Length: 167
Image (cartoon, rainbow, N blue to C red; front, side, top):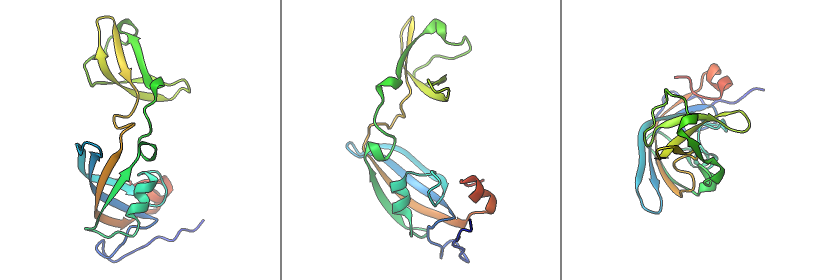
């Protein structure tokens, strides 16, 4: 199926549109406390519903040009979801591989009931048990993201086929 890709002479003239690779600077805050959770200037995604950013974020970015900013408030359902109690598990220390380092905050990979591999963060260590949390750290939080468009370019055919930037 042919796709219209917005090609501009330079990124300053381009606007965020389907088929554009967009590089963003961002600030992620917990909306209630205003705590800065993360800052970065290296978020790249392919615009057009490929899943590189949340749908509400993509909607807010559409049409912006380099240097422009937007603020997007996300409820948990629009972002990392609600906390899932089924992803809080307790494992015996003896059941873990001997080569796994057990420290608070370390990430272990386990298998979900459907066979997919999933990261679990160590949240508590007891002499015989380890408490693991498979929820995203921001699950259940109302979030505020500030995005600044740093660069826009047309996706290559390979990037479009892959549904993501190839950097």
